Image (cartoon, rainbow, N blue to C red; front, side, top):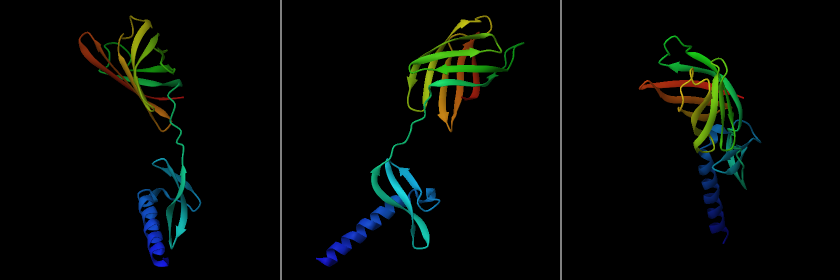
Length: 170
């Protein structure tokens, strides 16, 4: 009975090492814990190198929150005739929508959420003040990445597609 148990133990150990091998590049120092596919692995010294050992407990990954006040500078393409190509943005995101202001242009309005997941969202923009300066009805898209929002705006002006981009921070 000792031989089959030993053989089974080696297979289990090999499976644990094999499963951890995919993330072993993330193992930087002994004692560090790594979350991979919802499970905790601990960095341990295995022979002459570091490897991840399964800890048999789930880990919690905090999803980024889009909610809050974001600021940055936008850039428009094509540039408006006689207008600014770069302008300031203040975007407030709530659970189901938000608001947007372009302080340097003197316009802004409300955002109605079209879609959302943990790291990105799309909004329909409705300009409520400064209609003579800003284009109404554009679609604003945001994607959270490393503490910042990648921001895009798509709309139409006089039958022409207009695009704008920005990186926003809290």
